[in-house]
Amino acid sequence: MNWILHYRASDDKSFGRFSERAENLGFNMMLLGESQLFYADIYISMVLAALNTSRMKIGPGVTNLKTRDLTVTARGMISLNKISGGRAVLGLGSGDTALARIGQKGSAVSEVERGVKILKSLVSGEVTLYNGLDVKMGDGRHSPIPIYLSAEGPRMLELAARVADGIIVGSGITKDVLTWTQAHLQKGFTARRAHRPDIVLALACCIDEDREKAGRLVRLRLANRARHALAASIESVPMKHLPEVKTLLENFNVFGSVDNPRNTRLISDYIVNRFCVYGTPEDCVSKFKEIKEMGVSSVMLDFRRDIISEQMELFAKRVLPKVE
Image 1: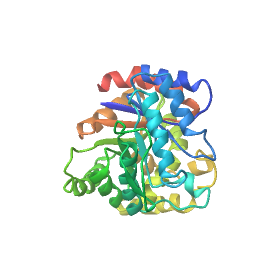
Image 2: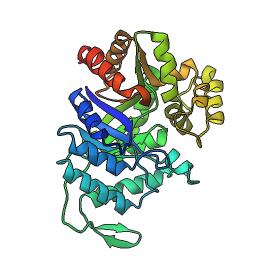
Image 3: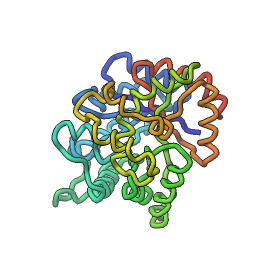
Image 4: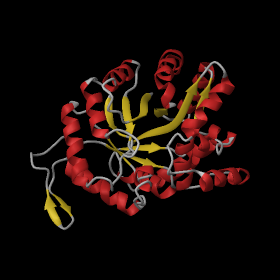
């Protein structure tokens, strides 16, 4: 399986060593979350990671179409691809907290489709019609940079299946949700001529010898991820769980810290089990094997940030070898 680490952008000098350690522990890719009011500049962070690694792919996880002009995003990714020796990936989404906290709405599905088309053309160095003008990144043609599209709702899943090089699926990890997700992806696949994209299952993870403690710890990291996914669609939520999901959506504080402890109280057991792998190392091995048997080949892990180094070590030594 391909193991992808999700973390926040950091401008601390130690972030280079952190990235090197992640690569040495077996992570194939690192995607960095972007929220400009709370985290460091993502491009500085990605360069730090690129300069301290040699194999691991690196990219935003995810950026949006509004806080930067598309030509600025394209230039940044071209530069990252050169510095990293061709290891850049562009994670893209409709926009969430990075936009909400500055009074902007996320991009519509049609806007995302247009943005993907423009960015693919720009990062390849092609002449691109943009704002009524023919524009081109001014130093020749470039190696293609894969675009991974974050998708949770039906329309975004279908779009990603049609146009993206990779799909970051955050809808949930249970069998019923994955079946629902696959049905919407299939609608997009039928309209696709090129090879099928890499499908990445995004989840929160917490490992501890005390299973109940792991369940408590994972809730803090989970709140924002679950709220974002369920805001995209509640179509796959069983009727009996709709009240607790609506409680989360109606009461989540999007303007506070992403890891606001007050939001933790909104997370029910159903939400934890839908979006998380947690428990003892043996519990996690069993769950990842189950996910693997469902045909998933790429997984993005989101650990609690205050214990991420410890969690990475536990995962690499006690879980990964037994899943592979």
